[in-house]
Amino acid sequence: MNYRTAVIGTGFIGPVHVEALRRAGVSVTGILGSSPAKSVATAESLHLPRAYQNLEEILADAEVDCVHITSPNQAHFSQATASLKAGKHVLCEKPLAMNATESAQLVSLAKQTGLAAGVNYNIRYYPLCIEAAERQRGGELGNIYHVQGSYVQDWLFHRSDFNWRVSAAKGGPLRAVADIGTHWLDLMQTIVGSKVQSVMADLQIVFPERDRPTGGVETFSSEIDALQTAASETVKIDTEDAGTILLRFECGARGCLHVSQVTAGRKNCLRFDIAGSKQSISWNSEQPNQLWAGRRDEPNESLIRDPALMHQRASDFSSYPAGHNEGFSDTFKQLFVDFYSSIGSDKTSYPTFADGHQEILLCEAILQSAKRESWVSVN
Image 1 (spheres, rainbow, N blue to C red):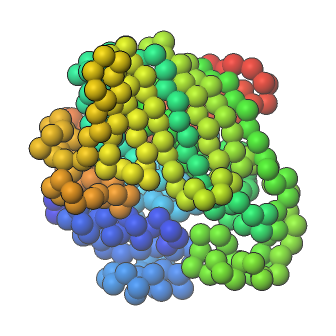
Image 2 (cartoon, rainbow, N blue to C red):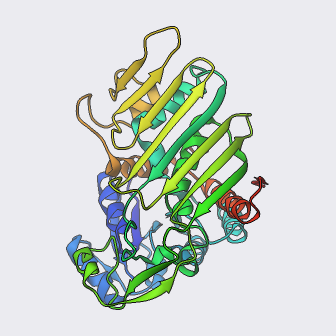
Image 3 (tube, rainbow, N blue to C red):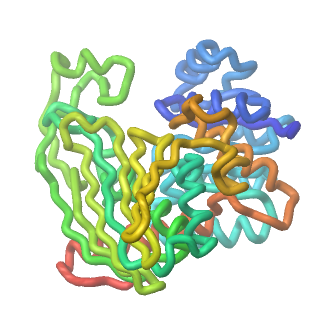
């Protein structure tokens, strides 16, 4: 593809982008951390040619065609804006921005510049999730009656677990919903082929207070073992640990999502069941190479990921033959392949800034619904 990319962010997800970009055939020019020391340390550990000292260095680098933004949420808008104005394509982690006003501006700016502008909803790119979407698009599921599912984790299970995401000032007023629930919501709208029209939400703060380490150690860091013994201070929490959301889709389907970051034993589990007038389908990210299809008058089906047995688009985004499992890291690679191969083309199949804006509208409706304890229209 001959594109060259700089990555912003040295936390958990930044190196995931670097590894996936390399596998996708994209050259990584370097990485930018929150400090020069982090930039240098990460560039060295990932064997990257350059440790950028600030965003201005990336934007001035003529070798950089695209910028991948994996920094904390509050930085996304300014970094994406500056990158587009500098003539760089942008692939941004979700959420695209901190509010719908900012995300709408980014959608407009991306359109004005004509540059590729995507959001990393990587869950779409599990081959069997693509297969589910292709089955629905081909009419195999029939009219969708309802969808239900969950996205649950346990990385904030203890009061002593702490990360910048628990703060509304840094991560936004929604946490569990915005951090992981949006992946489920994006996936369901993609598979069903219909947007969520209105929501009814009930959000739950399990720990109104948490113990924040005074030394900077955070859950999901490489120093996690030190978290239990680190000196700490008590801070009030203003974002949800869990929530349940009722959904109404534009196509008439109904839905229900449960999201939690305090479900013991579930490290990263996304599940869905979609009920249609012809058949139902079910998938679980902990067993990503298996898709279940249910029928009333015929035998049920368990499809093990096999490029020879799937629809063409699902096969196209499946790199290995049957029996050779594909997982989380592969979804990043496949999204990046789709993103970079679409540059310069009139056809865009990757999740765009418009999709990112729609998810923020959805999150804002969910937050309003929880506060009002009533149904709220997304738009």
